[in-house]
Amino acid sequence: MIEHFPVLIIAVGLLGAFFTPIIGLIRKELCSPWASLITLLQFLISIFLLYQVLAAGNISYWLGGWQPPWGIEYAIDILNAFVLVLVAGVCFSVSIYAKKSLGFEVPGKELPLYTLYILLSTGMLGIVVTGDIFNLYVFLEIGSLAAYALIAVGDRQSLMASFNYMIMGTISASFILLGIGYLYVMTGTLNMADLSERLPELYGRPVILVALALLVVGLSIKTALFPLHTWLPDAYTHAPSAVSAMLAGTFTKVGIYALIRVMFTVISPEYVIETVPVMNILSWVAAAGIVAGSVLAIAQYDIKRMLAYSSVSQIGYIILGVSMANKLAMTGGILHILSHSLMKVGLFMVAGAIIYRTGIRNIYQLKGMGKKMPFTMAAFVIGALSMIGIPPTIGFASKFYLAWGALEAENWVFVAVILLSSLLTAVYFWRIFENVYFGVHEHEEIKKDEVPLSMLLPILIFAAITLLLGLFASLPIGVIEHWVTGVLP
Amino acid sequence: MIQDIIFAKYNYIIYITLMTIGFYGMIGKRNLIKKLIGMSIFQYSIFLFYISAADVSGGTAPILLKEPAVYVNPLPHVLILTAIVVAVSTLAVGLSLAIRIHREFGTLDEDKIIELS
Image 1 (cartoon, rainbow over the protein chains, first blue to last red):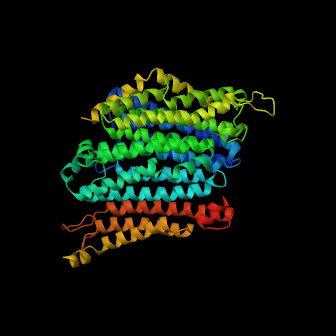
Image 2: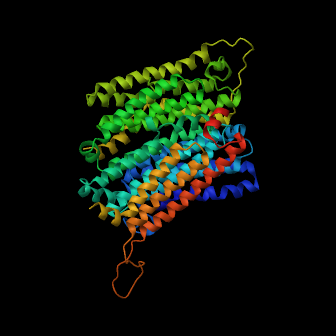
Image 3: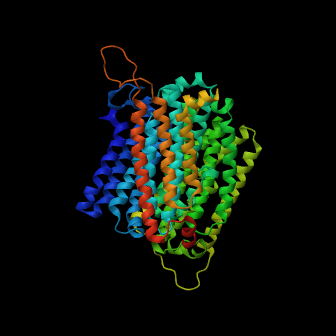
């Protein structure tokens, strides 16, 4: 049983999604607890896998007992297990939050919604768990198709947002498929470990360059790296709040994971850093994205749209950290996957809570919200402080490592960009603080009116984890450093 | 020289041409259905690439034969079978979105939809 856990995390999800409509036909109300149960199972399995990887080393699971590279292999190392726990944890917490939030924003659609929800979660976990590059493409499409449909159930404009996302997503997936095809034609294998052994002798060939370019561009669209981010703001703004929270916390992170995996496992770090300056190009693009995302976020007045542009900027941080490719910056970048996921999910859930109680999306109408929803707004403040990078939050730890890494690389432009963007982040969050706590509401007496407990609890838990992991940041950093020292020379 | 490339590798040239046509359709056209047509052409061109790469002239199916024979690698075909399923489901999602957009806005022209929303 235990040795089959790597595939069970997928099998549980696929079976769960299959049985959701049947359960929904019996009783509609059962769909939401069912989704929570399935994602909880996935979360527990992922925690166990992380524990096992840390205790006993990398796991290699052979699907159907076929030996790789002939069969499909599920290979789990520390990075996999780390992202796995993060994704499954976010999916589980948001599923609890989603019950009331989705019930309010899109009533009566539980049945298809939770089926897609479980499929999306399973698709993302599949991308992370697999060690076969074509399998990665298939799971990417499972996740993406579920995401297009989930976004389309939002408000009126969500249809067009979803359509544009689908066009961009298909371009990206097709590029990835083509890149995989080039690699396969040259090497005759699809297994990532096997590819990394066979590729070095082909490094002089232009075909590998083309494959690398296709994979990088394809995955950059999925991660919404700056000039290719155009699908993200619309999709996050118009999707239901719970869906935005889940996508912001997990889907782009999974894309970044796939990018790291392709760069550092399939293709060797020496090739992407020294022979071809992919990392150098990516780091400058990411730096531009950090500034552009922050500036665009300042220009927004819709709270969800502001958070979406802020996501573009934060994704820039992660890519910048990874692509500076020294140990400190890489640790910071991967830690920022965790911290951005925690704080952005928390912030999107708060935005959803505000919409649930008042229907307000304009940040200039949030006056007096600090008295009306004290706990929710306190969680918002913690998340926002973490975004700015104020100790003792997890956002401080990751930004500290990023800035330290930029200093180590002696690239002063990146140091300036990291610090400047923190300032810009403070600017766009300060507008909300000012309205929420210091704005005076003229018309009516403000009564305390919190959201239901099933929505409040996940919000508070995310705020608490943001704080606690900031205080005990050495825990995740230790895990990540272990992986980074194994990869970078 | 050039003739050799054209006649020996014409399927790759067709694949690149189709891909460019599809890409233009997705980016350049303003009608949503035309965008979807472009998307399909784009995806199918990649299938053509896989299938051309797997072809061996005179090869047979990879089944156990008495005497050794030239056979075709079945894996790319199987991969493309998966990719075709993915492409069909993407097209289904896209068409159903187009139907809902038409119901909501009464048009499929992207510029008019942006005006209306």
